[in-house]
Length: 375
Image (cartoon, rainbow, N blue to C red):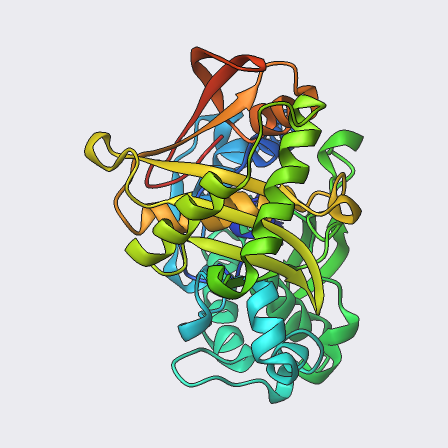
């Protein structure tokens, strides 16, 4: 008999930023790293004989938690990767839900009928992942093994193991980040002893990435919507400084129009469905010489504050500036704007300088953008 612990990877960028990540090989978030530490504690007193993982970074990094105490190598297995979603790779859920609502519904709720040109089907995933899992179990007869994979891949594996159809997987929850499923391989078949157990996680490390709605983005038309841009900037200024003394919105809307002329898509309006949710203004020229990008305005409508939506605006900035080869993102924050400072620090920004403005000290904040944006 083989004991096999099937584990989903820790929280990754795609989970945090509401993106389709599939084969897109992004980083692991700060929360994900804390989850990995919790997972390592679970396996401290559980000796293993081997550790395998999908060859994607988020899975390999997570597998290191299971391998830590026995100092085992992590063996990468490409067949254990997440589903390849083809042209949807790296795209944001909010945009896809607006553009392709029926296809997204089938992807999540009717997987037996979902297909997309250039992408795998759920059946394709099962056909490559199950033989790989079976081969691992046979190779380690009488041993204890950990295998780290991905949400939909684990779902497909469990459908095969439990003897249910792909159509029925809509009733099978996707495993949580670092959740463990214990399988027994005996007499040529798998038995599931328990599924989707995340009891090792500390309560604060169980934050659901679905707490906020999925926001879509569209370039703002500064000729038509200049007044609305100025309304957002005015409200942001008032929220940050407490008054409008010395403030005039026109120079900021003029600058935003220039950003759009230089690179369309520099200024984005965010929506939840038809409801306006926020606005993001990125300067495509500032910092180009030094390899950093500049956020001129990150604004959430009052109804969307405190709901975990701001990270989705930041994610667009990460994507925008990474595509231009920038290595960091910078922005200004008033030093007495405690809400904004707490948010940016939580998202990995660090103070690198101080300036004096008409309303007191302004902090210069920066976040590094590596190949993998690990906080």
